[in-house]
Figure 1 (cartoon, rainbow, N blue to C red):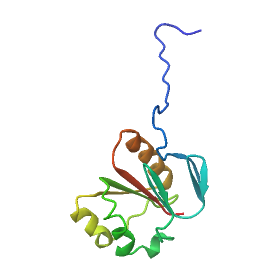
Figure 2: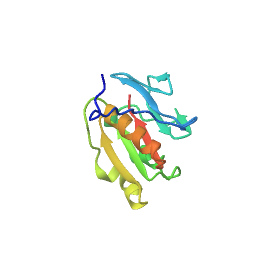
Figure 3: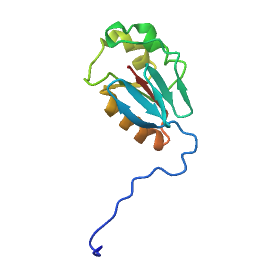
Length: 130
């Protein structure tokens, strides 16, 4: 029985159409709109890219971050796996100089944050290392 002082909160994203959203994640995969990926990917509101050649955090270079300059996001979220890790700032200096916000977080946190920001119609990119 629902009392008048109780509130039901429904968390549902409406009218996002074909917007790419994370629908699941695990230790060795993520899912976007129900499609499973077991390799590193880049997710934008309208696209999932598999051409980002980054595979391991310890192998990131300036070139891996330069990939995002042409995409011109407001925010880049880098999912670093089960543990939050931070690359040397010199690797992503060009993004900062271009006014692009860069955040490093665990993959689950990057997936959740991306979903929230893309639903707010923000120009966000999630780069997920698997």
